[in-house]
Length: 354
Image (cartoon, rainbow, N blue to C red; front, side, top):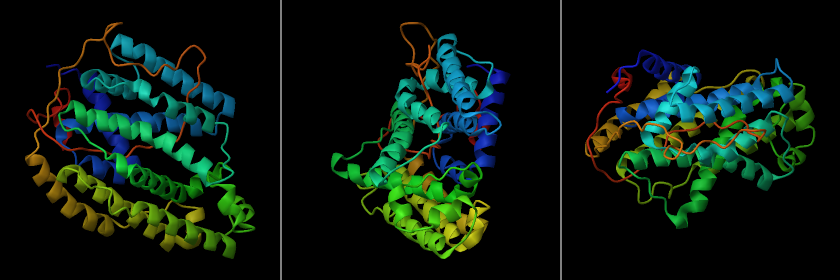
């Protein structure tokens, strides 16, 4: 068991960034077993790091895309080396090697992040959904792999596929509405023409920061649509109580976020709306109790860290030698059923479980 100070510091940075920049995500991660939290923080921080590079408006679109590729190419090499001088990649490499995660599954999502650096246009909802799902699904799949390695696989029902995908659509639309002010400041409008055309004048008003009847009507329509997608009664059918609790909590936080968007009115164009601390606490407090009880009956295993070698290591992203990579994919926590092994805190950062 190693007590590498640089690795512990790297995980602490991932944890701190998650907590400061996405409190709802951090709260969801707190509902998973302590042994899995550092890996979740590392995955979130990695997605956020790539996102920030693609969104950095101090650089040109070409420069932003190149920075994303440079980050991913460095990760590719560092998976071979088993370490990184970049703290977030250091934590991610350790997570991938310890949990045998195939990071090549993120390649498509990374391609989207790089392409997003050049701007994005959606003619209709199908195009928007394809982008949203290709953005999010790989990260959710990797989280499912993480739980599988811990002995608690998440089994998804084939007859529930549309339910899962619509829920992710609701997550993405809620995120888009929440980040509307930040996107508009960067002259981005990540909504399909199909809905903009249904509200004449709304697009122009939004791009000029004007709150108008067409904008108000469109925001009301979109929050209602997002709520419809988030409310999926069959979402947790057949799930173990622990992951079901996380999914229900995520849905509750998303509904609270949509309430905050609705209540914000004109300020949604200038400041990201957030639910009150009391509202969040009313959702999270009972969830923490239910999750703790469920996980107490569901031990998890922590595998030893794999020594990297050329023929036996987690697959890299495959983004190198001029291949493309890219943005916008913040990942909520996932979880799953079944059991085996015993629960230990992450051996490289035992103080991180709190």
